[in-house]
Image (cartoon, rainbow, N blue to C red):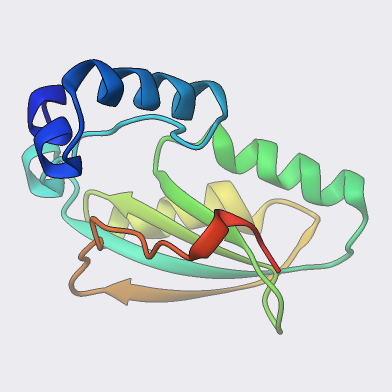
Length: 139
């Protein structure tokens, strides 16, 4: 959104809006910006959520696995979660063969992975707006 439109919507001067946005960046409230790209336009024909259970839960093994996930181009996002699974990994691949080969290479050959379960994603929609809770602080 252009600064002029933001200022108008917030009912403040454009210079005030610009300064507030700058301060939000400095305070790490705004972490960055991204473009929403159509997956099919870049060859992603299939998305899946892969639930992963670890064999052990040491800080070193979790951090090593997270570092591994960050370097895989097929990983669109990942979540370290509570419950029977330890990670939910959102992946984007060309097709089912690519998914199978990717999972075999990226997950099943790692000794810290005990179990994987794959859920195909038929549709994905991101909510472009986050809820804003008073004060912005965790309780």
